Image 1 (tube, rainbow, N blue to C red):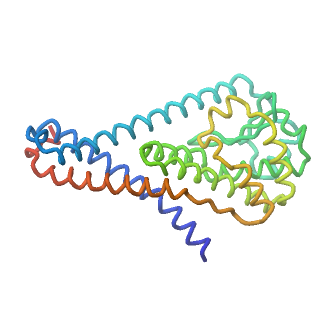
Image 2: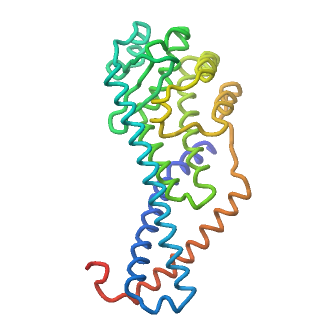
Image 3: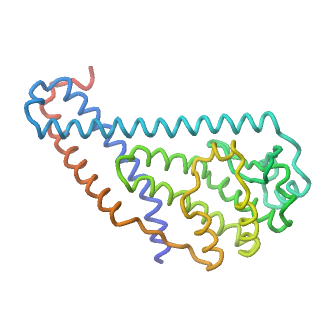
Length: 287
């Protein structure tokens, strides 16, 4: 029951965060209008500080989100270029394992210096593997790796994780924002591991994970990853495979208090900004 409640809370927090971002952006529009039309604003330091805080935090969030989006777009272009220029037939072992998992036609292979497997694509995700992926893995380990990526593909994790990073970037002025996004990425990895372990066994997946984690990542794949590599990811994944349960992570008390205080100040500023909107001339937001 507690696990079900945690999953329900996790599923509901992202729509709430998206709604909070939309509300903040709307308040920023009000703040810009108040700057432009309320000439007496400069004479009231509290109102001026509130409007400035709302507008400045929104601009900072938009700039940070735009930077994340630009980096993601650049990484995606690099990965598409890699696929277009180096696509090769699937090795027989990979083709057989993919077919057994229902992935026929959804796996691409390219030459790679180091073995890798990754799910890419926001609208129609696919799995990309290096041509030598099967060389260092047993058939069972290869199946476990593809089962892990199959979970990401079915649940459209590239798009979900990019959305999480964009939301976290918008809240870049809150110390907890990036931690939350990192935990979202880690949870998707842990969930994919659970799905793969159910099919292939925890020991087999752990062996494959440690083999691939010891190798340097392909630069194009690393650049295109929307999740990055959350701190402690490998340790948490191995701990789950060894213990059979999902490890818990806690936000540092200092970050929690700082983020809570920041949200409280921002909420107060937003209420002040909303109250000042009553003083705007009629129709000013529509001209």
